[in-house]
Length: 190
Image (cartoon, rainbow, N blue to C red; front, side, top):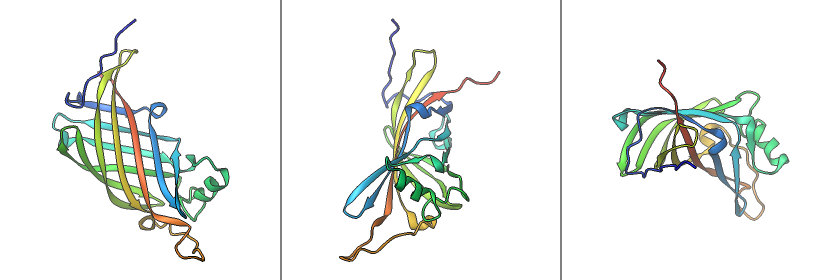
């Protein structure tokens, strides 16, 4: 039986291209519905994290299949796919491309970038935590990252809502995005 060596966030991540492993990653969101919070996720996504020797020269790119939205409720998911929210027929993907990476403190980074939803691109900041890297049982290397940000869905043209008789609205404007990412270091091409 082989031993898997896990590093800590204090150990620098090896430079190279790290491809996101969708089967071991989560792209989730939380939004207010009346008085509670509703959680959802996207099941279809791909992306890569390019780690440079100088962390400030690193970058992130990701694409999400908008139709893969899943909140555990088929009727709500159908509504999220229609023009009131994601409008997947006109805009089948969401995307993120970093514009800068800054080292905030040991293992924590600020990743600024452009988020595109419904054909609208807005700047966002991901608060990212590097969780470390490890050799895997198949001879590869894997790294872990957690990241969060919050957006205003109105900034992306998703303004549908209903007023509630007692005051307020059915759906909140703010959406918290939570990412748990495991990425695999890609072999360098010879």
